[in-house]
Length: 191
Image 1 (cartoon, rainbow, N blue to C red):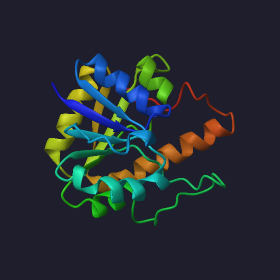
Image 2: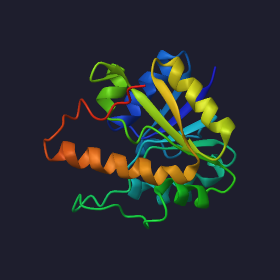
Image 3: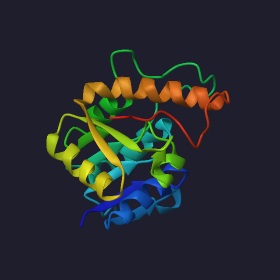
Image 4: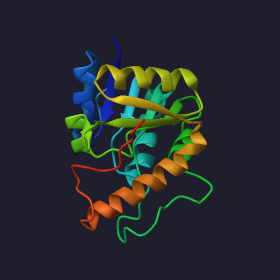
């Protein structure tokens, strides 16, 4: 059994917790009010808005050392919803990896809406979680948790693919915010 600590209790944190628990794994769900509680998971999911990441790294950096860190953030400009806030040749995941050099950062869940994680479907197809990262063991471990929870996991390549995953999520979020697609839908992978 794997223990997954999830930092963030908004829509995504509980949805990911449901997937983890469905697969028979343990969950530690931590909100802002739990800043004094130690992280117990071998896998830690950052289910927070991207602007919250520097504070988490500053407060919990030592606890995150050596762990698999799952970055689900999308570095959107939340004021304009018109751009990403990281350099064009980088990603939020790459910046987190640089800030946590002894952790094994993977990008995942950022292209999924909470509703599709909870339902396990997108347009009648199984929900697919795309995973990018440089550590094969970290990607494999997360893929096992995802698959055990009834979802499909696809290795999207090295961590540098996080930029493309963030761009895909940016498009999906802006379409949903403009009521062009549903927040209960989104992009699916038909394989």
